[in-house]
Length: 452
Ligand code: SAM
Ligand code: SF4
Ligand code: F3S
Image (cartoon, rainbow, N blue to C red):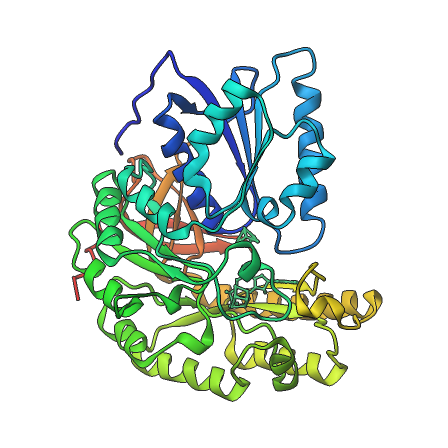
């Protein structure tokens, strides 16, 4: 891993990340921008910090209240100390910028997710003029242009790389089309360039990100073209992508799963519901039969492939029969991981006008769903015991314990006397819980995946 250079004269900036992987990527890039005006990354919150950015998420309710709670902690910590610059960035800033600026005087600026390339300009303005700033225009193309000029200094073994942002699908429950704006894809060449930089800095695994990653389209180059191109890069061991929409799993993408063995055999394919009536009401634009057909095609192309998914429990209008259809789908596909949440009403979305399912019923359904999902996960994990698995190790924990992930994105912990960070190691799995697999090292060196 390449060590980041430290400059003792720098001021410190601390960015707290909420929400999805794209926000994690954005946080990294905001640090990269801020380093240009001599603000050095701080991974803790102390009184040397001169600027704090809250990189927020608006996907479910209470997001805004969480931010005010966080600001309360900041105010308490900095009482009788010099006030840091406080910027609220991310999707809450986009959705509720003016409201939060007015409600909390401690906030100096709000900065939308498509305008964070203006971070340095905003910091300078606040330093000079101490006035309130609202920067929430959709400047996605300008942002992509600025990102290409600034090196991604991430040195993680497993890195994120945003290739596409925004969403044109307008599912009736979702804020993303309003907070991230319309679909916009980054230039193919810029992505390949950034991937090379990440590999030079020590990354071995890259996860391509987009709110609708498989809708990627840059001058007719699609996600599959990117997968083939990146698979050829020396030093890259593993490639993943998320989050994909079932409607955009095209035949060329399925073929890439067949051809590119660096592309890992786990696909996160959010379905939201097992009922056609609810899918239609959500505006998901596909049926359950089409979803299953896509899964079957992927299995034919890559027999070892497994799936994870997102489910929304109790979308308005979900009857007991509709809910049972989600349960049936869960059992049928055997998802090795699911993320399930009760439907949360979001201001400004079409579903916010729909009549909600009573809370008691929703809570009962969520418990039933998650119990079954955990049962499936436990059975899957039992089937892995005493078998070998290829693990890419990402970091050291304590006492010779190392953390990595297997091909199916399961977290794995082993003990090792040798430093195995960045190594692809064969591990015999011995124990598990719902979060982690524990194993012993079979043999240290594992053959890399051959380029497709
Ligand atoms: N683009 C992806 C797709 O098509 O499914 C999902 C991206 S969204 C950022 C991540 C997940 O948040 C969704 O899959 C959905 O399950 C969940 N989600 C979004 N809006 C929600 C809401 N209003 N209530 C509950 N869950 C929600
Ligand atoms: Fe939200 Fe995904 Fe639907 Fe877009 S496709 S509106 S990001 S759930
Ligand atoms: Fe949240 Fe915005 Fe991501 S709402 S899930 S941070 S795109």
